[in-house]
Image 1 (tube, rainbow, N blue to C red):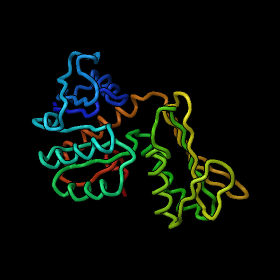
Image 2 (image 1 turned 90 degrees about the horizontal axis):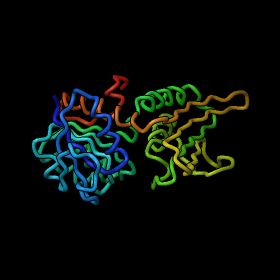
Image 3 (image 1 turned 30 degrees about the vertical axis):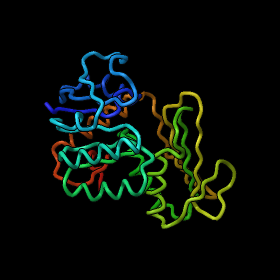
Image 4 (image 1 turned 180 degrees about the vertical axis):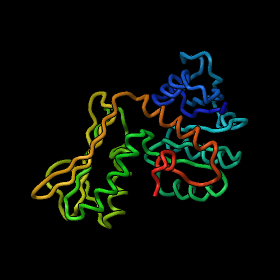
Length: 251
C-alpha cells in the first residue's frame, strides 16, 4: 500500500479525499496537515493530524495538495527536500511558482493539475483538437462556480485558455458579457450559489456552433481523480506531469 499524506485536510477537497479514501485499498492514510483549524475540532478520529509541512512529508511516500498558493509553495520546498512525489491541485499559481516547479521536477516527480477531473482532462484534449480544426471560429470560454470560490477565472478556465492561445497563437480578452472585441477568444465567469463547477468552450461561425461542456455533479470526482494521479505519480521517475500523462493522452 502507498503511504499517502494530505495537505489541506480541513478544506472541502481534503474532506472529500478522506471520504473517498475509505473505499480505496491502494493507500494507507498517513499525515493530514491542517493549519488554521484545531485537529480536535474535526470529525475524523482516524487521522494523524499534523500542523507543519515537515511533519507532513517525513516518511510519506506521496502527498496530495489542495491548499493555497502560499501553502503549496512551502509544500513544494519540502517535496523537493525529501524527494517525495507531490500532486498539486491548488489553483491561481503564479509564474514564479510554476518556474520553480519546472526546476524541482528534475529531482522529484511533480504533477500540477488545475482540475483533477478525468472528464476535464478529456475536454482539454478535445479543445486542442477543435482549436486546430476551427481556426476561423470565434471562441468563448465560460465557467461557473460556487459563491465562495475566490479566484476568477477558475484555474481550469485558465488552462483551457492557455491551450487555445498556444494552439492559435492569439490573445485573450476578458469580457463578462457582450461581444468579443479585438480578439478571437473571450472568457466569462459566474460565482453563484453552490455550483460545484461548470465549464464550456463555444466555437462559433456564421453557419454553426460547437460546444464542449463539463459539469461537476459531485465534488468527490476531483478526489477520485487526485487519488488516481497520486497512485500513478508514485511509480514515476522525476519529471513534471499532468493529468494527460495519467490517462495516457499526452502527445
